[in-house]
Length: 158
Image (cartoon, rainbow, N blue to C red):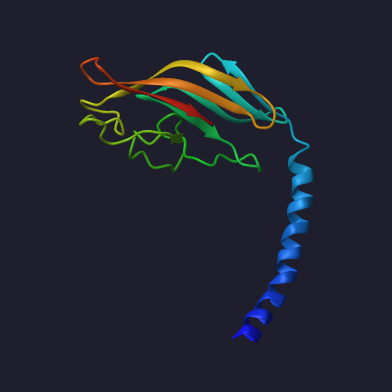
């Protein structure tokens, strides 16, 4: 068994070495980019080399979301509905807006859906917005029941 294990290790070495070299080359490209985070009327905008990457929207349905999320080739990585209409895009699950954080049941209140008797996640404040490496969006939010009672708060760092 030791010989077989040794042989497997020898066969993995070149691919590990290749992965390391490719990673180093890619890191050089990645680390030359500029990432900025700036306040916007709707929340905070993240740009990579001046191009929109995403926006942290304070109000979208009943929770803050990241929308849109733009990939490296300039294409949207998440669907537009219900924030934007696109030809041929499904219009189901209106509560699923791009990228967001929530739970279906917090002390018996549904914060996942956004229709009916559901809770709302309200942005209270940005605790940090920072450009560079790492770029940071940190926010404090209140989770509010349909009757206005505060269920909990969260502090999230993206």
